[in-house]
Image 1 (cartoon, rainbow, N blue to C red):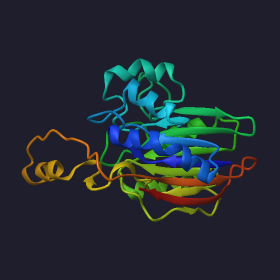
Image 2 (cartoon, helix red, strand yellow):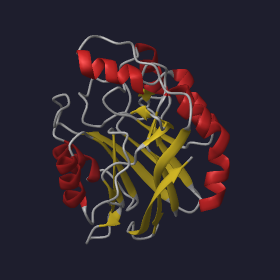
Image 3 (tube, rainbow, N blue to C red):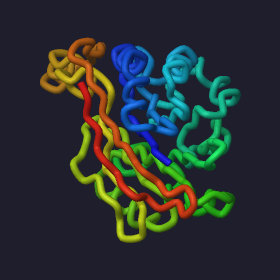
Image 4 (cartoon, rainbow, N blue to C red):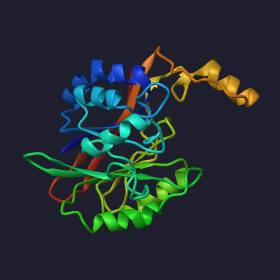
Length: 255
């Protein structure tokens, strides 16, 4: 099973790049399923029904999110109705939507789990305790975890905690691809951050001059996405669908 996992999609620039290029990327790697983090896919951040549908229409099969998942109220009903759009499972149980999705294909079943870290982010249920509860309910060895977290140490800890229990732990949120893609001793694929799909000459997808003004002055600045020189970051994984073990994981950076 070949899994194509894409980092945070930023605004219309990232969405349009995926619409224009995802088909050839999937064909190049023979991807059986494509997962993308869409929590910044709407203009101004967050995800909207329109941006989520755009990703699905472009060939994405499962959309994960993170700390901006519920920023836009218009997405609440969509989280309940669109099963392949998921939010962190360790959100409060009253939150709309669900924290995992099982993708059924003729040759395999793959569960995608979304979790959010606690370090430098909101106080939520422990992702370690939450994933323990989820794993008890699953009947497939093929499990991908999108861990949307700020701290590299927290991501690494979850990776080793789940080593041998899931197929891969893929970090998102920082928008910067890391160079540590590898297979952990128990057969779990790991990378600290997939990176982003957005304007490369930017600060995390935001026009550099606006981010710089905010950083230098500390004053409110209305961010705008960088629409030029757009690229895509993520990873390609080969997973043994019978054992759930990761055979290989390769970072992906395309322009």
